[in-house]
Length: 66
Image (tube, rainbow, N blue to C red; front, side):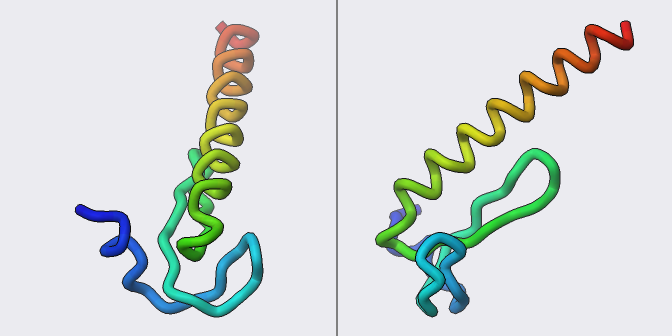
C-alpha cells in the first residue's frame, strides 16, 4: 500500500486545520486524528510519542495495582 493510497478520505487535517485528503492516526485510548499528506510525518511522530507515553502510564498503573 503506497503512501498516496492512504489519503483517500476527504476531511480536515487535525494539525494544520486545512481541508484535504487525509489519513487516520489511531491512539491507544481509542481516539483518532486525521492528517493531510504534508502533516503526515509530524502527525505520525506525535501519535507514536503519545502512544508510548500511554503504554508507560498503563504499565505503571498495573504495577501499582499488582
